[in-house]
Length: 142
Image (cartoon, rainbow, N blue to C red; front, side, top):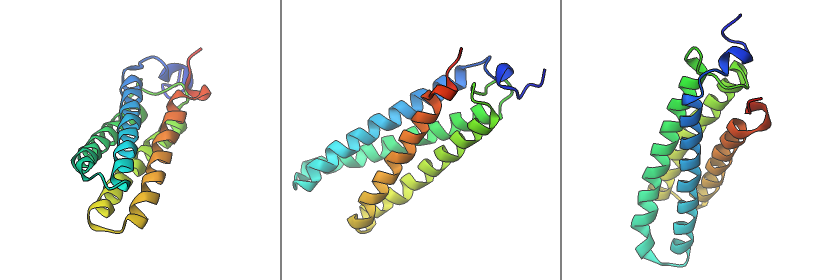
């Protein structure tokens, strides 16, 4: 059998599990960011260090997500039931989320909030898209 077929690639779920955990952590960190941003909008400056710390959590989570997605895509036997094209899409979306997070955070620190907030929404959309891809019907076993 060809090792890149869906049946053969479904054998080792370790990196897929790591990917799912990283995406879940990223979603939790983004939820934290929205909660602390809401405090900042109401001029509660005590939330600024919490929001700043949450940004680091987003960077770490999307970094682990990218690494796990890359390994799911490239390691023999580590692929998802969705197949190699699906795994490549997850990796590309993860890469976009990771890179966008840094630009979005930089705009929050040094740039206009009119750009920071829409990019935050785009970042959330990318991480949610990742979640849909790895937990979606196409990526389930059986």
